[in-house]
Image (cartoon, rainbow, N blue to C red):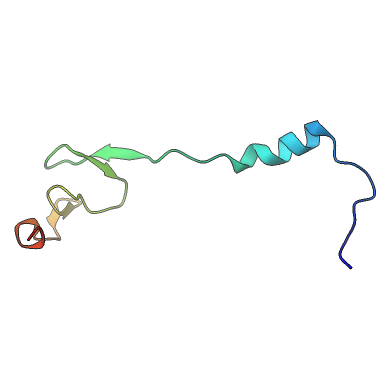
Length: 63
């Protein structure tokens, strides 16, 4: 048998515990090359660059 609570958890304590369960919003920045919104620390899906360096060849990968 597992652990059983000795007392009821109040609504305030339950709410304070669940306050950290909220979903965080995605942080977006603009690509310095094309200006489209990009997730931070990710390759731009529009132009294929990361930190000013071409990483993905977009013309060949869209076929």
